[in-house]
Length: 70
Image (cartoon, rainbow, N blue to C red; front, side, top):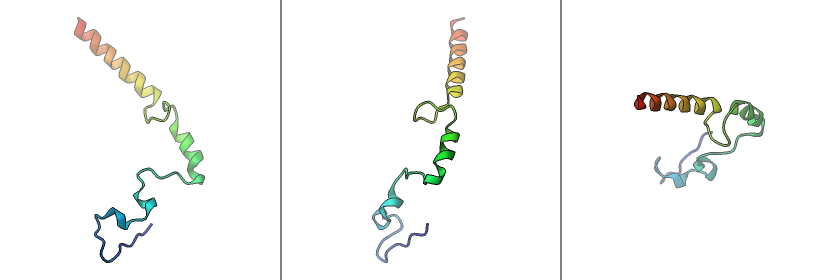
């Protein structure tokens, strides 16, 4: 998407951009919603953490705790 700035607007002036360009997290296009569902995999809720990653971290913490207690 090409956005042209007004003559008196600087590149750092966010008010020169249209509202949709200033949004941090725009919605996915409709044709990509199915792909997004598949990519979520084993994510927990609306987070980016997967169940596998959380289990791995918990197992590593348990090993560290056990090592510290010895």
